[in-house]
Length: 97
Image 1: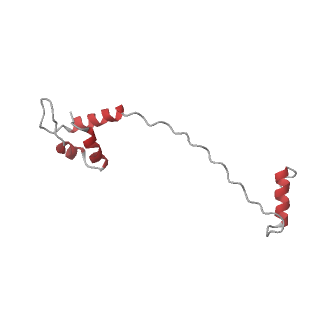
Image 2 (image 1 turned 180 degrees about the horizontal axis):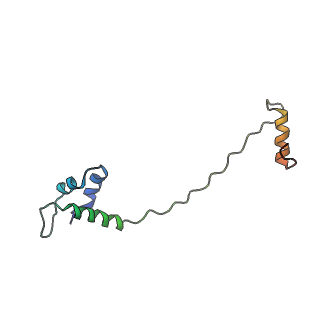
Image 3 (image 1 turned 90 degrees about the horizontal axis):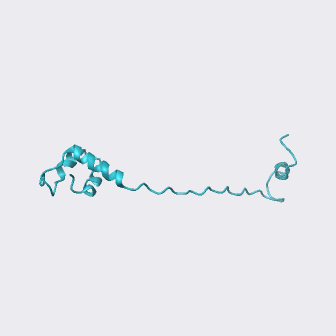
């Protein structure tokens, strides 16, 4: 078995091929102590370690509130016709003409 999955993970994430990673690792205990694990053993050990990790907790993302529109008042450079239409629309007094 691969002695340390934590040793292999950074190498895998760096993009190294599995045969090269297997050659860099050494089995420390058991009847195969001192030898490198097979590529299949490396795949299996990484898959088992990934299954044992708890899934990240789902996050609740709050819905963004709409930004209030800035409607300028009398005396500004806003078109009077536009202001009238916006007021009617806001008060629910008229539809599109």
